[in-house]
Amino acid sequence: MPRLAALSRRLRVALLQQPALVSVGAFWLVLLLVALPQELVQDSWLTLLSGREVAHHGLPATDHLTVWSHGARWVDQQWLGQLTFYGLYVLGGVRAVLLTHAALLAATVFVGMVAARRLGASQASVSLGAVASLAVAPWALQMRAQSIAQLLFVLVLWLLAADSRSPSRRVLLVLPLLVLWANVHGTVVLGAGLVVLRGLTFAWTEARAGRGVPRRAALLVFVPVGCLFASPYGISLGGYYHRLLMNPTLRWFIDEWRASTPSHKTATFYLLAFATVWLLGRYRHRLTAFEQLALLCTLLGAVLAIRSIIWFGLCCLVLLPPLLDGALERLSFSRLPSRLGRTAPAILVLVAAITLGYVVSRPSGWYTAAWPTREATTVAQLVRCDSRSRVFADDRYADWLLWTFPELRGRVAYDVRFELFTPPQFLSLYSYRNRVGDDWRKAARGYDLIVFDPRLQETVERGMVEGGPFVRRYADAQMVILAARAREAQARRCDTGATNSPDRSAARG
Image 1 (cartoon, rainbow, N blue to C red):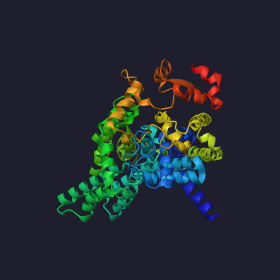
Image 2: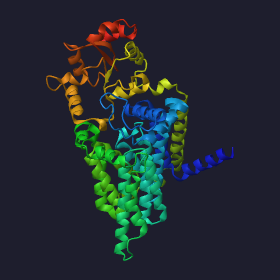
Image 3: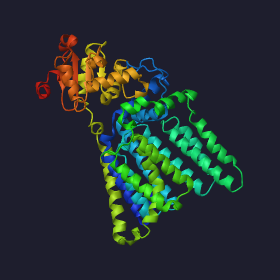
Image 4: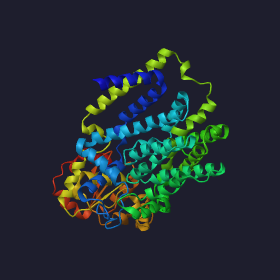
């Protein structure tokens, strides 16, 4: 009871002193909770699958999950984040996983807003900056090991920005955070780069003042490089980072690795980018040299790759508000009617609490509503009909199948770990997806079942069925299963039930 009373007092104080921030935080939490089923994506299944691999087989050294990369060197840099989410699944199922994911994203925004306030920004600017930052990369909501990395990024950036304003040994806390990050997500390279940047600006400032280069600056420049390898994989991570950062095939093959060319997907980013550059031009004196460079570096990274827009948005969450203060000096939430200033956040907090209660009470099927869990029995019966059958699944379903049916380990063609692909495999899959060349079916040759999302591969489905080597065994709006004609007679002898559903197959026939 005393703890509840203390929490209630703190909440009342926050409602009175920071109503705008409480409103933004509560509204963001509501959005996270309502969208939880959509936040479960293919990378989420890879996270859980890889965590199970670590728990049951230890840290992987070579791949045994898929056919294409079987025996290939697999450095699972994200092992700790994956193991954490798998542990949550063991304890509380997919509900615990997604609720923890939502808590991490909510904490990221909360910490980011607190950091901006501690750096001197007004409540109005912090609120507006948070709204702009949250809208720039909606795909940041996806559940994956990156959920942990987002919180680590904001904590590291806060420590560095605070140190650039008032140098302190407290900045060395970034080093253990980098060590943790190096076992959670590959974006630790970005975090280490920001720490090095702070060390360089610190050394430059001290040298210009005639005080020489302090030891702390040297630590910030050199130690972060070592932190990148503070993992059970050690120096093997060098090859992993190189494949991710320097592999041109990834940029050619995967949309999120491509440059952020202007489009409807990047429109919000470019609006925020132009606003940031304009504000820097007018009010850069409100930021330290490190903060200005951090904004520009993350902006450049976001231009070079769509996937980096997330980190620019988080950087803006912390560093943009001081710039906004220069443009919005006359705007103050204190001018709002006092009753509205107290009522709006209180209502949003109440809505967030009700939403949380509703979401927690939902059965596990609610969380996986975006996935064809009922149709999975059809896949199970078909693959169990022949223990030697192999499955050619698309990006959406490969890891989901491996997670749902452990017996498929080593029998699925590939999954979303594209860094394990060889150049010929990239080319083969590209030809298959786009029906390029006379032998475009080559990628799926030798597989007994093809499983895919029909919304993404409609033309491929027609090419494989009409005069091709496969027949349609199951089809609905979410999933299509094609079976090799050579094994059709054997498959028919298996009573799958769902396979013989005339209404669903006819709908796509």
